[in-house]
Image (cartoon, rainbow over all chains, first blue to last red; front, side, top):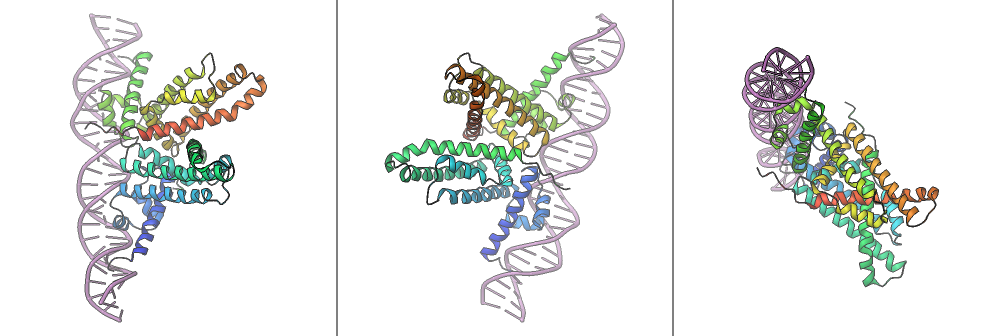
Length: 185
Length: 185
DNA sequence: CCACAAAAGGAATCGCGGTTCTGCTTACGG
DNA sequence: CCGTAAGCAGAACCGCGATTCCTTTTGTGG
């Protein structure tokens, strides 16, 4: 079969990446073997290596996938037509945290400490989310608090920073709170 | 030599644990081999296994060591005779962050996601630090803001929670900011 | 000081896990 | 419809790294 159609190929890639994320969430990045991922995804070793150069590559893809997904759900909140105040924004973000994603997020931070590629992925995603929060809070200042747009953006920056920090701490708490959900062997 | 004197034995243990922390900071928990730690500590494989049952045991010890050390420096700030206001407290804490410790701290969070033993160590240390902040902020409310002690403790709780969260976020940023400082081969 | 058990050194072991290789299968382009 | 090259399965390989074992050294209690 001369090359899968691009859509189908992408489908397989995300199928693998999603399985990887589930495995990572259970056992951590380094303790999940390729074999674990084959079991979780229902595919085989060869198949995985047909789609990803190596494990590091797959880890990066999984990180990107999970961050992208999170950015998506955050984007929905941030783009609300009536911008919520910062406290409300934060509690909505907090409520939307998924334990599986939270665990992998924390593992990803750790990996970023060591692996430059993952580092860039994490920093980039973080900046992107912070920018969304910044926009959202600016909109709130303008529409609800009736600030003037130019100053509003300035005022919003430190608030966005704070909300981001508190959100990340909440991610950490979720990751630590949720039961480790051991492999059912 | 019938058993080292307890003090000497403890010295060796911390010598190893400190070397381990440095290695972890550079390469992450799973990517540092026992060989790396022997090189860093100047001791040999056999020696390490004489002091720690296995690698997991050493990881736990290193985590404890690093958390204990951090709790120590935080304790100094928190126990100041003139309690600083929360913002000041936070910026002092932030200023005292050591990049090496920050990286290992984040790695420890990740490990806690998976390893119940490390989980307990992390949660315990976190609670301990939060309690110190709680005390410090309560003192500030009482001495500087002239609250009544009983309500002060209640008021202090959410503030302590917030300061803790912002501190942890700052730890994360430091861990991500500092250059990965590769092994000089 | 001595004797001896414990600690340090380091080579050898052993299994696990990432990667590769070899055929079968199958989906796409014509 | 069909040929074919890509996808897929899974066995085999290979190296790395944790742990063990045995020898040598050394600190300590008597």
